[in-house]
Length: 251
Image 1 (cartoon, rainbow, N blue to C red):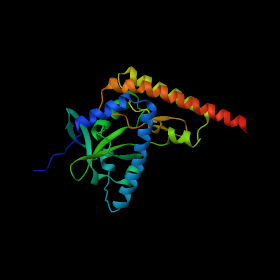
Image 2 (cartoon, rainbow, N blue to C red):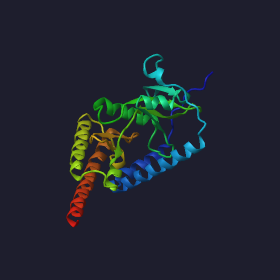
Image 3 (cartoon, rainbow, N blue to C red):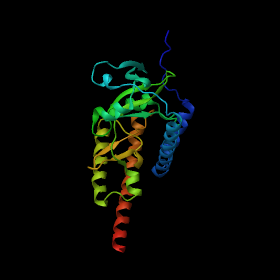
Image 4 (cartoon, helix red, strand yellow):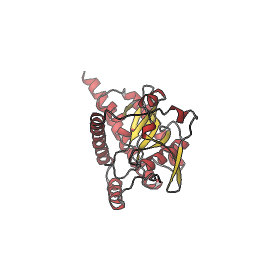
């Protein structure tokens, strides 16, 4: 008999401790933690590409155009569509404007199915706010390795500010959109939970997408965290605008 698919497991004591630390930490510290995680993400992906060049991928298109339906599995009473990793092809993902979000086990407060489900709920409220989640991806070990979602195009706000690649006037529009999106989500009783600048993607048309919501917590805790993040982001953007004006005057 085929071995069943196993959801990702997390030590509840470690999970609880990390969540409590994040909850009481100021946004600046949480932003530092997130920036560190982004750097680890880059390193992890570079190592994976170097050591896994021979990884074979197959064709995903039939799953997406209805020729072959997704399989489904139930975790915690919720149904999830899924595909096996060897049925995923990089070329077809790119052609269909999709991307594979690989799950990193060093993030103790995330599970791929938890983040997928939270994205699904956010998407149902505001499909412009986050990418559309497509299906979980199951690896050879019968563990859930990550998920497929619509591709996120643009640059994270942290990079735009650090490299001064955004007009200070445009930051007003970015800030307005962020506040509108979060207000819409909160009015429906759901929050993102991790609105650091690295999780806010801005495209060339100044349209916003939020990535990596903080799953594994209650909606109330995410909503509470969103409020402190918005205050922090407001101050950061105001500081950026003031700095740009000062630099312009000194020229």
